[in-house]
Each structure stands twice: as structure tokens, then as C-alpha cells.
Image 1 (cartoon, rainbow, N blue to C red):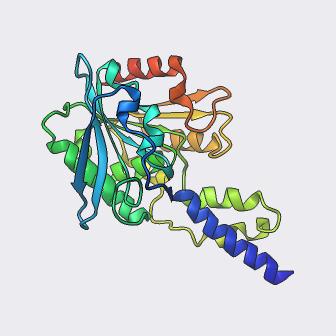
Image 2: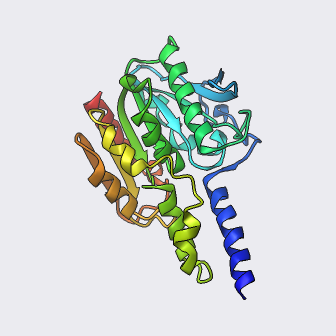
Length: 272
């Protein structure tokens, strides 16, 4: 029985790592499927990885630029609906795939993804069509990456606001929660979680974001990342900050709600 427990624990911790990175190389659609004008963008990281993204220009007016960091699974083609509505409301959108996702080269790992985000911010800083009002918006894994990247970014002064949707406090926190749900690995949740990279901690990094405004969005019915993560992040963050808890909201579903979209537009106009 003991060998079975450790075998299952080993398999679980490896699948837990897979939860953080579950890329898909094939793009299922382009922004044209959403009737959006777009430009394919290729740029390079400091360690020589070529990344791919899309530039969606604002329609009618240019109120700002949203840099979007997607979640852990698939690629930008399956996450675009979270931001496809923004160009019609006056915002440019730059969304890109991390290394190993979509058309981007390489293999995903936490250190590499932080380099990817820094390269994206460097690119947007130099792009002549980007508005000087730049907002960093991340969902799920992208939300937590946004926090830890921005806290130490050489480009943080260009960011007018940070929006995090369905983010988590620490990678080890999530690992422990998943291990605790399985009776065979419940006794091993603490030692096994120590195998998770602990270098990047959103709960600590969010204390270093101010004076950049922080907006935290989270559904109260999120079963992937429980709402307690949002509450802890909000408590740790320094002003200016806001916490929007969405009743019965599920994981990264906030932007499907027209009322939340309008509320976000009102927020963006106010802070920028």
C-alpha cells in the first residue's frame, strides 16, 4: 500500500505541474472570426525565444491599450473572447502566447514566462500605435503572473492599472489545495507541495505594486481557484485597490457578463 500511495502522489504532483502549463500549439481561430481587424506580432525575449501575439486596434477612439495575459490552457485563440469586446469600446488589445503556447517557440516554465511578459511590455512600450495609457490584465495563471511580473518589471512605470481576474496567492497554496482533495495524498499535501517552484509569490509581490491601482475580480463560485485567494490578495495589496466579488461567478467567466464589462469600462475611464 505504501508504494501505491507514493506512486499516486508522484503522478499527482506531476499532473499538478501540468495544471500550471497546458499549452496547445494549434490556433483554433483568428480575430477575424470575431470580425476584428488584427495584426500578427512577433517579438523576441531576452533569452532568444520568438513569441507570437495579436494586435487588435481600437475602433473609433483610442482610450488606452490592454496587455492581456491568458490562463494556463490552450492559447490566445481560445482566450480571445475575454477581450474581443474591448476594441469596439475604444481600447487597443495586445494579447500574446507564452513560450510553448500557440505559435510561440520554446517550452513553458515559470522563469521563462516572466521573461515573456517583460519582453511583451518592452515591445508595447516601443510600439508607435500603442496609447500611453497601458493596462495590464491577467486571468487565472495570467493574473498571478501579472502580479509577480509587474512587481519587479523594468517597465512598470508605463502601467496605469493592474487587473487580475481569478488569480491565486501562491503556487504552493494551489498545490496543497489540490492534494488535500484526494484522500491518498491528503497526508502528503505539505511535503509534496514543497516540490513546487516557490520563487514567485503573488501574495508577497502584490504588496509592491502600489501606487499602481489594483483591481481584483473573482467569482464566489470559482471551483478552480477558490474565492479566498482573491480576499487574501486584496488584504495584502496596498491602496489604491478594489475587490469585485461576483455572486455565483465561476472561473474566468467575468467578461461574459455585459454588466461587468460596462463596470470595467467605467473603471478604466476613471483611473486613466
